[in-house]
Image 1 (cartoon, rainbow, N blue to C red):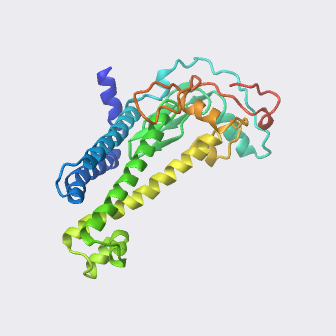
Image 2 (image 1 turned 120 degrees about the vertical axis):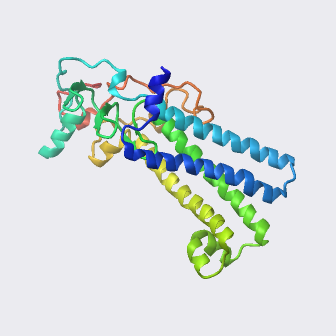
Image 3 (image 1 turned 180 degrees about the horizontal axis):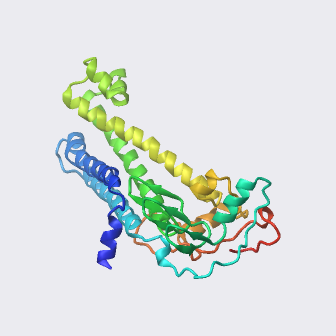
Length: 308
C-alpha cells in the first residue's frame, strides 16, 4: 500500500516535476516568510497571546492545505479502482442534437466506450489522460501544478485545497498590510505602487533591494489570491451545473437534472459535505460508484433511461 502511494505521489510526466516543485516551494516560502519576517516585525519579537492565536490559526491553515494536497495526490480516481466489463454494454444515451459532431461527442462520452490506449471498456464520463496514461473516472481536468488528474474520487480534496490556499493567501495579505503599516506608518501611493509593480518601483528608486523582495512576495500573493478565487468560482459553477470541465467545453447538459445546489454538493462531496472543509481526514464518500449517473431524459432520445 505504501509503495502504491509513493507511486501516486510521483507525476507520470517528468515535465510536471517543475510546476509541482514550484507549488511546494511557494507554500514553504510563504510559511517561512510569515513566521520569521512578518510576525516578529508586527509584534516586535514579543510572544503575546495575539501572536499565539496567529500561530494556531496559521498552523491550522497549513494542516488543511497540506492534508488536502497530499490526499488529492494519493487518491486513485482511475479505472484501476473498478472492474470493467469485457463486453461493451449497450448504449443508453443518444443525443437529440441535430449536429452530427455533437451527437458523436455525447454518444462517446455518455455511454460505456472502448479506450484504445488503455485497451479496455470504460464507463460514461471517463476520459483518457495522456499525461497520467490512464482513463480517469468522471474526468474533470488534469492539474499541472499537482501533476494529477482531478476526477470522481479526489475532486473533494482538490476543492478544499483551493479553498484553504485562498484562505491562507487572504490571511497573508492581511498580515502584509499590518507589516507595511508597521514599517511605513501609513499607506501611500509609493506603498501601493511597490505592491502592484515591485520591479517598476525598484527601477525608479522608490524601494531598496530588501523592500523589492518583500514587494514581490506581497504582489505575488495578491495575484495568486485572485487566480485561486477564479478557480474556486469556476469549479463551483461546474458543480452547480452538474458538469465536468470537459462537458462544459463540449456543451453537454445531459447530467443537469434540476437538483438543488445542496444536492449537487452531496453528489460530489458526499453526505457530510458541510464538514469536509474543516478537516481533510473526515470521511465523506461521493455518491455513486463513478460508473452510473442520473441523466436528463429531455436531452436524450426515448432509448435513454434514468441512469446510465
